[in-house]
Image (cartoon, rainbow, N blue to C red; front, side, top):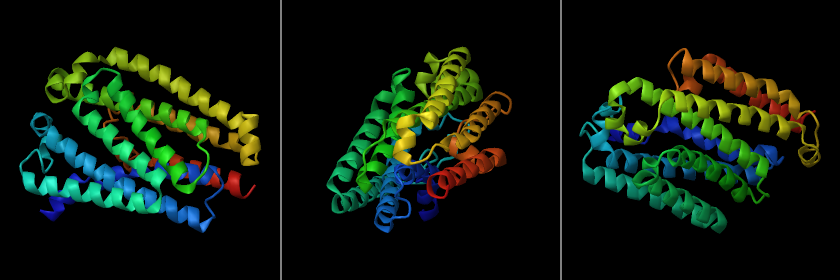
Length: 290
């Protein structure tokens, strides 16, 4: 049962919460012990909250997941975990995480609570509204990025939030396209909202968001305001990694028919993984060494 519960908590998806460290890095606080410890606590809190939300979503969607070729194997959909165990785990994860958030910082607690409520609303209603479903997923990433700034007490960068939103939209539409092509005629049986999409529509949306991500990140990198705030004019050195990462992901979506799980791709696809690591290292060198 413990293994099944751990699997349902989806620890691999905790990688999404790494966005919480963005404010720490770009605010120049990475070498500050207090800020670093707070960011780590925030990361753990959001990992617990994310796992609680995944359990809630899987339980709520268990009947639809039984129609999915892969999700039907999940412990909740397959009946491996009982209702009592799932509800108990959800309560424990939410209560412990929000309790820690309350103790650490009240403003952070508010953001964490909004994150939970918003995602519960997504699981119950928002994911059934075309376009709003993907935009809601993107907003979850924005809330994560915002929480990372709140916990260390720095001003929230509009650039950070906008770039986070656009990148999350890019990944979200890519995931929808993968689901649509993977399930073909049975797509609406698994996720009813997929019936409102088509490969052509998603390709158009992905094209718009792709251009927006690249252009917005370039504007951010060359912005005089950002250069003054970060005390460097060399952030443009990170642009090639962003552009290649976006293009590589598009290749995986269209040629390899991947994209169902961005976190899985980041771990399993060596070029993507190397690009992310090199981007992070370059950012650190530009902001803290050059």
